[in-house]
Amino acid sequence: MEKEKRMTPAGEHVLRVASGMFYREGIRAVGVEAIAAEAGVTKKTLYDRFGSKEGLIVAYLRARDERWRAWMEESVGGEGRSAKERLLSTFDALEGWIQHENPRGCGFVNAAAENPDPSHPAHAMAVEQKKWLREYFTKLAEEAGSETPGDLAERLVILHEGATVAHSLEAATDTARKAKEIAAILVADLPE
Image 1 (cartoon, rainbow, N blue to C red):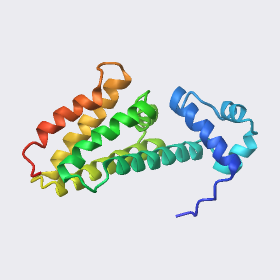
Image 2 (cartoon, rainbow, N blue to C red; image 1 turned 180 degrees about the vertical axis):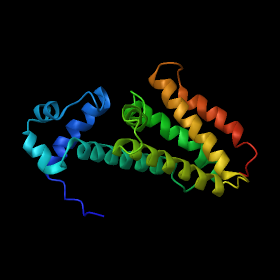
Image 3 (cartoon, helix red, strand yellow; image 1 turned 180 degrees about the horizontal axis):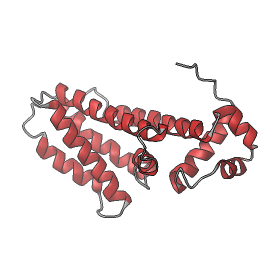
Image 4 (spheres, helix red, strand yellow; image 1 turned 45 degrees about the vertical axis):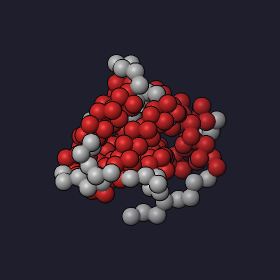
């Protein structure tokens, strides 16, 4: 694996600007020239740091994934909560994420929808991120004593993703809370 270059302040600035534009406007809708202009840098600076638009897209999704994982893991915590409570607290984490980071829906789902080719790096990263979420839920379900942790994890992923989509499309209100209520039914028989 190629060692990643240390991010320069200019690279961090370009990534911050591009991340906002990609999320708000869509990956395909935003060109390199628009990003460079908004960031107040030359296209050369952008290409020197990221190599290509695809390189910038990968950096955007990687940074978003790191923030989401940290948000989820910090929100779920561990001390003082039962494994069952930690499973349900993933919906509290989702509620906060939707309010602060995700008003336009999941950045990974959006990226995969814009780039349906499985070989495109954005699509592949979206799939990888959702696999991580399923694996994280599986681990929590195992800790909670589920007899079918993989199945429970998939059901929770469906609830999480459904809550995100329903919120972003204004199909329902309080989506994370309502999804948590449904999840509570799914985990009701798990040990405390």
